[in-house]
Image 1 (cartoon, rainbow, N blue to C red):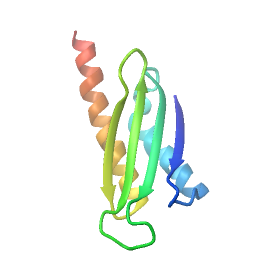
Image 2 (image 1 turned 135 degrees about the horizontal axis):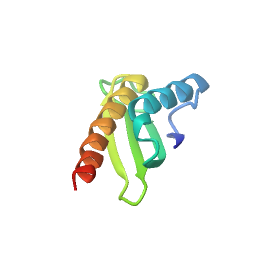
Image 3 (image 1 turned 135 degrees about the vertical axis):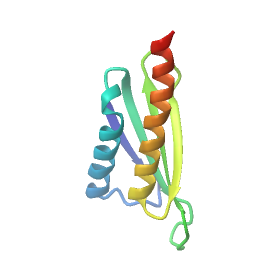
Length: 104
């Protein structure tokens, strides 16, 4: 499973954020690593330089072998919270999607 970090124009690609994002996503969906070829992490600050509540957005897109991609989005006050929330949503979505496939 490959993990790619894609910061928006308004986000500095700080190495610590990239590393932490990859760890969060890997921990959340690592058990599906045989079925996932790639996870794309997209982060952006919707208000740019202006401050705002829940203006940090993270979208995760998992490419599942032989199936349509699974995508989720989460908004939060910090990038780490947005990434963590999106990772949790992706984990639940994959549990539901891949669990349903196992039952058929």
